[in-house]
Amino acid sequence: MAVADWVPIREELRSHEPYGAPQLDVAVRLNTNENPYGPSESTADAMARSVAAVATELNRYPDREAMALRAALAGYLGHGLTADAVWAANGSNEVMQQILQAFGGPDRTALSYAPTYSMYPEYARNTNTRWVTGRRNDEFGIDVARATALIERERPDVVLLTSPNNPTGTALPLDAVRAIGDVAPGVVVVDEAYAEFRRDGTPTALELLADHPRLLVTRTMSKAFALAGGRVGYVAAAPEIIDALRVVRLPYHLSAVTQAVARVALDHADEPLARVDELRETRDKLAAQLNELGLDVAESDANFILFGTFADRHAVWQGLLEHGVLIRETGPEGWLRVSVGTRDETQAFYHALREVLGK
Ligand code: PMP
Image 1 (cartoon, rainbow, N blue to C red):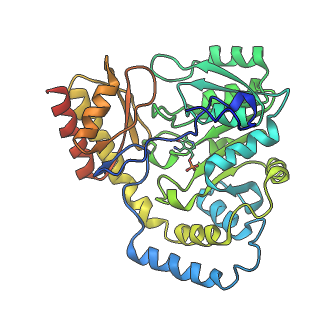
Image 2: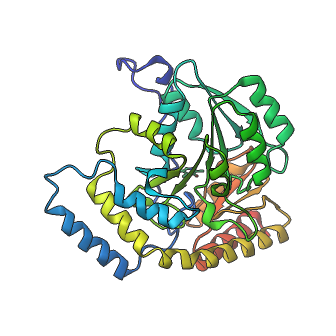
């Protein structure tokens, strides 16, 4: 549905639709890579107390610099990071848009390797940044020689890498990030929204920050931290890079309520993080089960699995929906993506899939 003819929107936006997966009220929702476990009652109580405390001061603007939250996030990330090397915003979506506002823009170029997170081209469009897409290989990894050749040709101001990648789950070796960083003329962003779910032995690009001043590593509280509804994403980078993001942020962009809730969530981080091992086990078990069904399954370091391939993936998606299971019709042609839920939700998906496929 395009924007109405009489609305004087920018012409290049007219035919576009708002981004988003269908929000359907079904029993098993495995479509947006959320953590299936909400905060415990005691954490929720602590959040409520903290919100009550700030509520009496909501006549005042919040801390514009969100210093206490940034210090807590830096403490969580470790790697010697301090508050001035961390920035937070309303989801890593907003962080990423700020990165494109500061480092992209008219006459500038951003580049990524598809299939990857489908919001990236939208940040580029919204900021009038030229958008270039390279391709991932057949295993959804990045071929370093081809990737660096593309960078040398296109001279992007922003390179967006995603590790683990959405929707494929693929993690990038640090050597690839280093090689890309060596040739990239601008900033290199590693989107680590799913980092906490990575398999043992898969490194984080946080390790590279000390030696790579133009590297930014983005994270989110929406996934492992079970705070998608709280809307907090963050980025670690050199303090000078963070200062560049501060130039484009809206004043008071992060509400006092958001900051308070996020700080409580960080104080209680042990609770959702203790679930991560279970979710990783559930993922690996599901991957094995899908393999046994004879399906192609992309290796995943995230809390979702890309599987296929289907001549008519929409029919499979629809069949699952009719069994009360909502997954995501996304990724390369013929593939589908399922988020890892509780053990029961994940098995409900698996049994529904077998029925839909007649296996
Ligand atoms: N990056 C990736 C790779 C994602 O998959 C998502 C959400 N699906 C985001 C960023 C944005 O998440 P949020 O804005 O909730 O932090």
